[in-house]
Length: 379
Image (cartoon, rainbow, N blue to C red):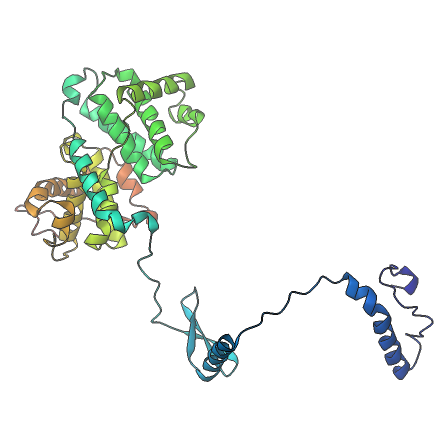
């Protein structure tokens, strides 16, 4: 760029008069010094004011010197990195060293657990779980709906729930709403799927934040069998039948609370969840409270994995309020469900838990023996 093309704001010296380009070396140096002197006032006025330096008292200064001296003298001072390696400072040269002993902490403090009020929360949920037991009179009350139709609907809802990527608690609340409505209202066979979709819509509004499905999506998954107006009407009907009382516990929520006390690894926790969701499709399993279902799942997983003790008298009995005898019957029925999954007609849950996301726990097979009991389980 030529001198006459430079903007006037920055052209603080006449380059031709100073002979900046054509002069010898010592003249060019003198010219550059002259340019800096001439431009100092203009440029200094354009620069933003600098922040005042932080002044440390004598104690802070001594502490800073000690830290710097310790970094300089300690040749193996590690700085943990996210990728599992350490950054070691040695004589001013940084080197990356492999550290096989570095482990990510397994437990992350979750403020939502609220350990301070954990006992009160567990007590309340246990009481609520006992009060929410069903009367087992739904299919004595219904004239067109059967247990098999219920299993078909719930198997389809599991698939829809998985496709919409909804929260696990949404599925449990949906099935709870369906079973409660079955005991309160006679549903025609042609409207059973409509009530199932409306229950999913209500549970999504209650549990989800960003993933609530739109009504048009529900119309689509029903293959346009029900228009938008009928889904909204069924939603209002269900809420009126339940008197707006949607608050309930679930075995999944109880399992989350018991997970830490039972010391469940990730795969064992997923296997417990698989057992609980298998129980959802079987109507006789609703005779057990959510507390019993969660406890029986943990007990059965401990038996399958040969974890001793299977049911700790000090820890599990104190937190669940159940002893081993009270959960053994439910655990046996869960075991029969797990062993008979290959012969079942409804396989949405098995397909879902065969994915890597769920650690493929549905592929676990348990050896079935003629004289089988919970003491001889193998996988």
